[in-house]
Image 1: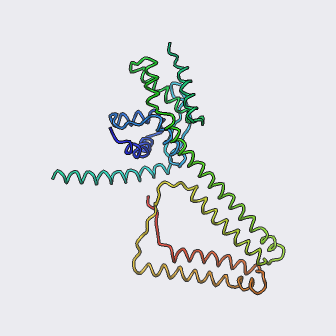
Image 2: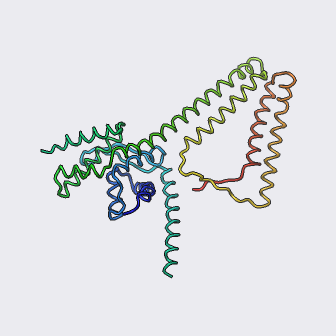
Image 3: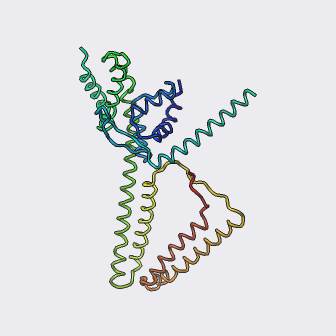
Length: 110
Length: 216
């Protein structure tokens, strides 16, 4: 299981990256993160919504209420321009951390 | 006999009791809960088990409340700052009015009113700057970086800034002299003073502030 600090730190970049593919809603976001991480990245479902609301207040994402094909009301979130910029920055920073870690790990096996 | 609707209503009450009172998060959470229950039942769980599992997955209301409060606090803080910025602009505009009225009627401005006029404009510029910083969303902190300048460019930049700054000071002198000798400033001198002030600020920025650019 991934540590909760890392789960919290990765929430924003993951949400931004998922929304970059198109608008989505809370439940679907959680399901996709679970599926993509084979259930290892396990968010407490209810904690996603405060994060989404915070990101909306910061102008990174926007939301709209709509009905799904089943008639259920859902709040759909999508990326704003500043969200795209934030996502690019997150990718850059996480890639840097990843490359440093990968480099150090490689050196251990040489 | 398990009653799903009754259980969901009970869960809503617990959420409200924990302090999640704003309708939007609670409605969103309930929709989420219903989707999760539906999913659990599709996996073969009974309605009552599906409800229990889903409630556990949603998490403890008091923790959620604390998280929601964080974003509400940020939102409130931002609104207060915007309100203060708007109030600052209005107060600044009010301070400039007596000077403008005297200028319109007599083509002169008494030193006291000139002081208020300068104070008013300073307040307007400062408030406008604060509003801009708030309204333009802060995506990253420390997002600008200093750009290294060549040994030739740096003194040219500082020198040019200083020349503009001194020109600004020179243009403000007639107005200052009028204030000292007559206790008022005439329209023409006031116009030069405003122009001089703009040059002073612009020159100061060029001369003393490092050249920065925003990191993408």
